[in-house]
Length: 579
Image 1 (cartoon, rainbow, N blue to C red):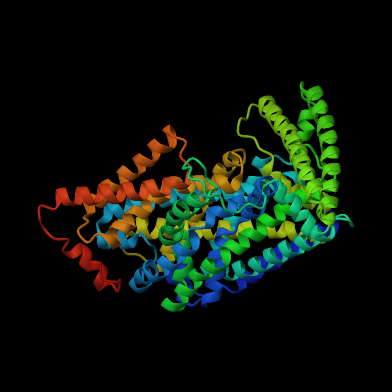
Image 2 (cartoon, helix red, strand yellow):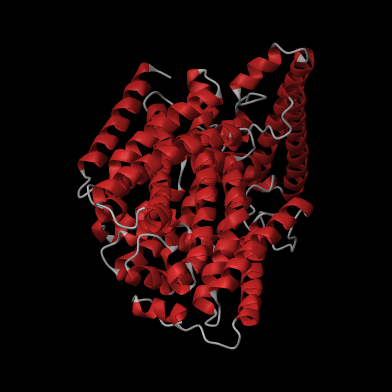
């Protein structure tokens, strides 16, 4: 990067971190450190909810998905608005009125300690692994900039995030979220403007989008019923609905965000913000990826956006094959560019006969380019022995570093890095909260000073940060990061959701039923994941249904005809809605 970009990057990062720490108040008390004494306005809590999920994975992985597949990925979120509405009128009042630190405290009040502990443990494992994937995204970016391997950059990113989280507290995290959201959206909009202005003079925005449409990149709805397909309307609406219910309703990293709100109404409004704005924001991110694709239709693109692998292939025993593919790729690009010009001319002349022929020719040339890129990717996989290797995570960083003007490069880099750092901080804060509240204070030291518990929280933060950094080294090579993080979550989320559905939807459920149901649910998801090709989105449905059915059945078999008694009553006396 240019020295000016480095100055911008370091300066903006330093200011955001300093301002976040300066805003921290009452971090010497448990409620202040974990919940900001429930003082956050609804709009800030809402932006924090969105920022926690809008990590660097979104900026790196989702733009790469847009470049490769277009808008198909947005179907992943079709169940989100409905899930937000359901949660706002059910789980949010249930959690907020009970005045607890973690979502899993409810499960002991409703069921028993073992159900609470197992559910919280599953959250800790799944969230720590997902946090590793969040670290991986900027590690990919920095590995290009600094010339280091992904392992070294993952450690460099993880260490500052650990330190920031230890001293920041949730209030610092929340207000940092607000600034980072503004920075990210501003950077994305500026990139869209530059990409549209950068189109050739004879190509309008409508003409360019017509080219994207010819390749299927503007198709945002696929009504075909195929449970093996992740990006379809039904998978997103049904599987995504269950995923979002669990993520926003049962995942401590999200629950903790809206528990910081000033009131129940503020907490509900903060969650509904995602219902209104999440899909438009995802479309914006995917649109950036589509526009990057269109940019490279008219501008020569590298065969591999991953510079490290490009250099490695040139010095490998298969360098000659790689050079041949590079030449074929350049020729295929030239033919696609000429076909694109003819299709644009046909669109402008409105000659229907020529338009159909030009569109068919462009589709053929696009398939040729894609085929050569796929051969290059396969060659890399064979050479390095990594069957999961993909170039998709390097597309947007490669475009930023090679095409954007000085200054904007630095701003986008700081947006990507801080998006990761801030998400990591929020995740580590929630991991620390669950560790202290659900395990240490529950089993080790039931009575101690706030100072003691905060010391343990900071140690737990360091532990989970190191764990996530180790996971990051592994997940960086698994493929599209935005898919990887949701695959990890979907393995656990459905079963966790099933326990909460038992708690709020089946009055006769018992602690034994919930505990056995949770084990059955996890085992069922593991079986489906290992023996079938069913999309990971459906794992959320499978896990929730398995837990609920098994839990209800075991509850009936073990009740002996009695009533739920104090288990159900505990929730009502603690301010939750009647069950």
